Structures are given as C-alpha cells and as structure tokens.
Length: 414
Image (cartoon, rainbow, N blue to C red; front, side, top):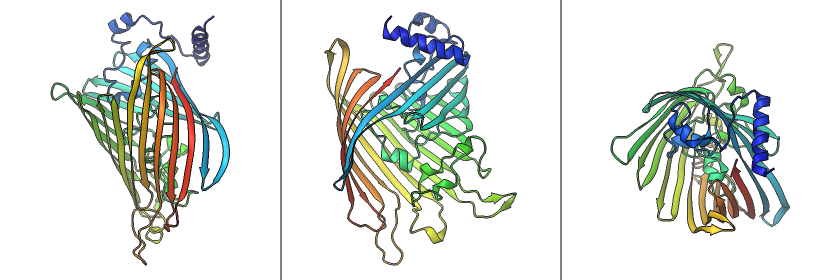
C-alpha cells in the first residue's frame, strides 16, 4: 500500500467520523468537474481576493473535500550574546473543509492547531452565495480584507519561515472575525480586473491597550469571546479594492475601522467611544524570474490623553520581499523542482511621536533583514532556510538590542 493511498484512506475515515459525506481526492474525474457547474471550482483564483480558494485540494473537489497544510521549523537565535540554544517546533497544522453545496453556494472552513495543541482556533468558516460573477454575499467567520497577507497567509506560499512583522504587529494577522458582507470582481477592460470586498464584523477589543506587552498592540485586541458577541455593540467596517493588470500584477488599498473599547456597561456609557483605524497598501508583481511583493500599513488608535506617551497613538510598518528563481528544471526525479533566492526587508514603529517635555522622538521600533534560500520539489511544498538579523530599540532610545539567528523550515499543502 502506497503512502499516498494510505493518506487518502485516513482522510476518508476522518471524514466519515465527522459525518462529512462524499470526500474525494485527486482521483476525481477532472473532466466531470469541468462539466458540472455545481462542482466547478470558483472562477477567480488569481487575485488576493481569490486566494482563500486557491488551495490544491479544492481543484479536485466534488461535493465536499478535506485538505490542509503543515509547517515546522528549527530556530537558533542569539540576542546580545545570549542564546537559548537550538529548538524545533511544529508551528502549525491546519485542516480545511470545502463544500460545493449548490451551483451558487459554497462553504469553506479552516481549523488551526498552533504549536502542537497549545492553541486550537477556528480560523475561517464562511458561506458564500454568488448572485452574479460581479456580486457575492459572504457570512460567518471571514478574514477581514485588510492588506493582502491576512487573506493570503498560508506558509506554503512563502519563502520565509516567519510572517512579516507589519502583517502580525501593525495588522493583527491572522485576523478572523464574525460578520457578513459582499465581494466581487469587475472587468472594465481586457486584461484588467477590479476586485472589491466589504464586511461588517464584531471588531477588535479592549486588549489593544489592556495587554501584558506594555504597548499599544492590535494583535492583543483579538478575543475568542468576540466570536460570540461584540464587546461594545458597534461593528467594525473593513474593505479592500484590488486593481489587477495582466503582465503587471496587483495593487490593493484597504481600510479597517471601528470602536474597540467597552464604553458601555448595563446600558450606561462609562467611557468615550475609542476608535481604531487601519489603512494598508499591498502590491505584487513579476519581473522576469523575480517576484516582488510587499505591504505597508498605518494605524491610528484613540488612546486616553494620560497614556499617550507610553502607548502609541500611531503605528506604521512595512515589508518588501524579493524572490528570484535561480533554477527550475527536473532534478532528483522531480519534473518541476525550483531553487529560489529570497530577501525580506522590514520595519515597524509601535509609537510614532515625540515626548512633550523634551521633543525627542519616541523610539519603539524593530528593523529586520532576512536573506534566505528555498527549494520547492513541487509547487505546493517548500523547504526554506533563512538568516534573521534584527535590531530592536526601546521607547527611550537606549542602545538597540541585536538579534541574529538561523531558521530552517518546511511547509506543504496536503
């Protein structure tokens, strides 16, 4: 019995135990899939908007299918001459379930296991109803379309072990929220496309300020409680416009905003309504064998006046990735293996502003340079090696802490 056949048997048994009928694998008759509009995969799988459905298992899906991805890595870091030594981690194991319910209805969900079973979370659970190719409705637990990475974050798609700092610290990816909205794609001219997404969701919570990090931190504003109810009854709005041009790539602008604090208790307002606002610009293009993509973001947070010098009211950051395909040819019995060189440049500032008493700039910044190399035996599997050089400066501008280290990892869809 082959390993692939054994894996298919295991998936089928898991599906049966979960009561999911008709789980199929890559042996599905692709011609039948194309003939039947109920089974056909979604039309838009090229843009950031379509990335949620650009998973290999969906292309072979009939009524219902299961897939996922796994990633693991090793780390060896030294910070100011001190090291904790060598460590290994299985960072994520994610399970996808996709179902084509009817010709205009599809469902997708993702269950994430982080660091073994240390954290288990329902990351996505969304029902899509396509009214026309230009308009679809979505409800459940979507990924708010702030930036590109939040919707397009699967590790097998990236040549770097760590996620971009701007996408996890300034934008709190991966951000999942309960809500509903609409999305679609327009084609105003040949070779051009415009995508739009807009959602109302429960939004972020008080943890933006009330956290253990001692700084304004949007990622701490995420809460499992907000999958059940909004902490303030005031939904957040998120939206993104993407502009695609054949041969050039895609650029997107996005917005996220809402009240984050619990300003009301038992019907009585106990605090001002404090808002958080995010804006982001993302882009991706190919120049020959060189892929360039990046993301820039800035946030504005309403912070009580007495805390404004300790907790940042404005934050910003960005990353720029370069991936150059060095080799693509058959090797080791693999018909389309590739070797890539990669470089990431990134910077974030947690507190933009100056001290009122001295006029000196407030420092709470991180800068990193990450060169690397990767090997892809197949398009959906990557082995990656990175060196991370990172410099961290505290609020007062003391001499920066310096971190350096090696990371080797792998990621694959299944």
